[in-house]
Amino acid sequence: MAGTDAYFVLAVVAGVLDVAANLASSKSDGFARKGWGLASIVLVLAAFACLSAAVRGMELAIAYAVLGATGIFGTALSARLLFGQKLRPIGWFGLALVFGAVLVLHSA
Image (cartoon, rainbow, N blue to C red; front, side, top):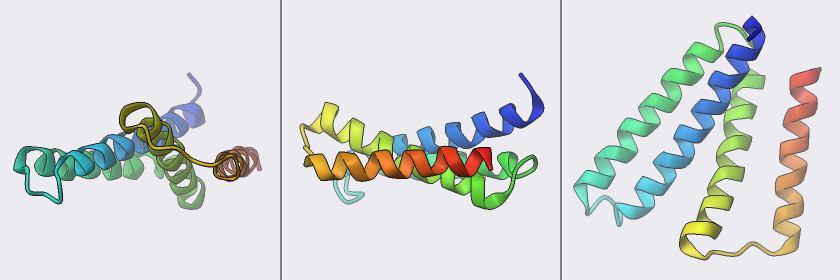
């Protein structure tokens, strides 16, 4: 894997960890369930550790956009699959625009 690709993968991994943190936070029931709350905090810290590593080889704006888009898209998909939450078609269109914008930003 080329050097810049490794940094991009780190930014995506940060986004995936962000999704996991969001899901754990949701399961924590407002942090009343301490195990899930602690998992959420640890996952957020891991996500930002990966982001920190990613910005060593790519611009912060791009790395954070990749993390954000991955997190938003992954959370929407996970909420649909795991919790039955539904977005209207315009919501999915918006997500596609965000995802496309990040791809354009990465290739710029």
